[in-house]
Amino acid sequence: MSSYAGPATPRSSDVAGTLKLLAFLALSVTLLVLDHRGDWLAQARSHASVAMQPVWWLAGLPSRLGESVRDDAATRTRLAEENHRLRNELLVGAARQARLQVEAEENARLRGLLGAAERGGLDVQLAPILDVDLDPTRQRLMLNAGTGLGVHRGQSVIDAGGLVGQVIDATPTTAVILLLTDPDHAVPVAVARTGVRLIVYGTGRSDRLELRNVPLSSDVRAGDVLITSGLGGRFPPGFPVGTISALRPDDSRAFLVGDVQAAAQLDRGRDVLLLRDQASPAHGTPPPASPGAAGDTP
View 1: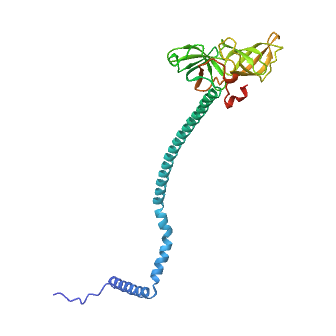
View 2 (view 1 turned 135 degrees about the vertical axis):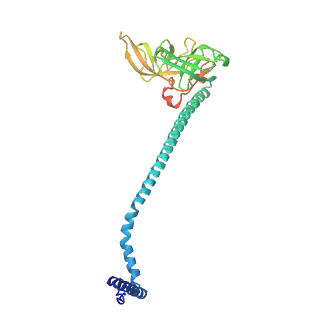
View 3 (view 1 turned 180 degrees about the horizontal axis):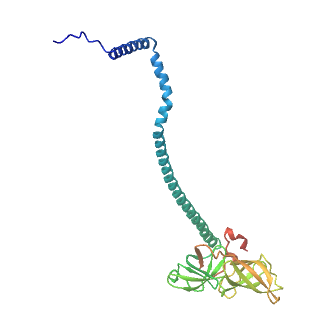
């Protein structure tokens, strides 16, 4: 027969847990009451939030750094593209400006040509230069005008500064000009100041002509302007040929040799004038030179 052991006694661990729960509940209620009356928990949360700001900033730093790197890369790419576009525009603008400047200079030379012909009362024909041959042994120009436009051999050629040369060959569409500076070319000239007759020879250089066999007794000096004398009938008289830049004795010491700066702009320009009428310029004076050669005009 079983015996009755009596009522079970509660374990100490259960009692402790219950007491802790009741303590926590009492503490919670107390805190709720105190927070409701004094709002001190809200202030604690605010202070805690301020204290956590550095932690949040550090936590978001990698993301911000990534965005900054992406933005910097995009900005650099955009700036590089803009720089490339602006550089191209600058190069194109510079090329256009250079072309306009060349065209303006060429128009000024063309106006000088036509103005000299008009002021001198000359019957001339404007001819564009097609090709240039300035070899030291061969000084030629080829013109884009020939017998089909009335060009013929022996025709004198000038520009706004003075005599350029003469036509030595012509086809229906082109003509070849022998320049004053050709080594095989000689032009009878006269000193504008005194009328002394001399001969100017080509040297093969586009910037220099030469006087030879000038008598020591001749009234010739550096700075004298030389014009065509008309002797020989090849060139009409009165056209500027050049200016004596220097005089020196020749090897025999019996004559003088002179360096002459050509009046015509033999190494530049895209057009020349062909004289249709071989008569002298109006009033017996040479045509006015362009502003750049005004000092070479007698």
